[in-house]
Image 1 (cartoon, rainbow, N blue to C red):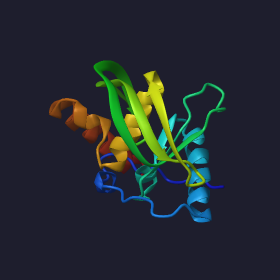
Image 2 (image 1 turned 90 degrees about the vertical axis):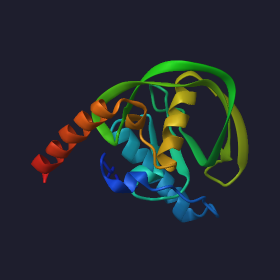
Image 3 (image 1 turned 90 degrees about the horizontal axis):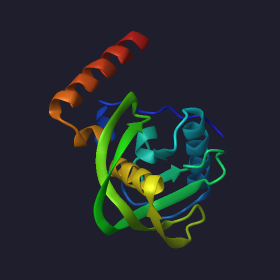
Image 4 (image 1 turned 180 degrees about the vertical axis):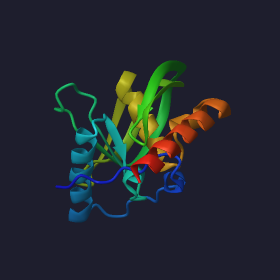
Length: 168
């Protein structure tokens, strides 16, 4: 397994719309394992393939405290079960150090393929539902900063650009 580089906002590759996975292969499973290792090392609770510069509809999540509930979603689709929105403070491995309030549906039904290419459907709520929606946004080329005011987004962009120049 390997720890992958995570793209950071405002990298334009984060705006790429991911293409569907047509076949789950050993290479797909290796990517999944690398993504989990990367996510846990960061540390985070979700990671979309787009964030590691692989533009396929694949993401990993583990919202457990002890890293005991790893979930894989390949080609995920979501149906909103409850239109009531919940407010959540979201952060992102691609927008390090920033947290902003985002409103998202609290209850959803997710359909996807697992790491073996087997289809499944599951009802999700709370943090897991929010995390999945956040990661699917990445697959669509969207970031949580797109939900905040342009002024806040610009401030975050400038700060991250400055940090990236300093590290370079």
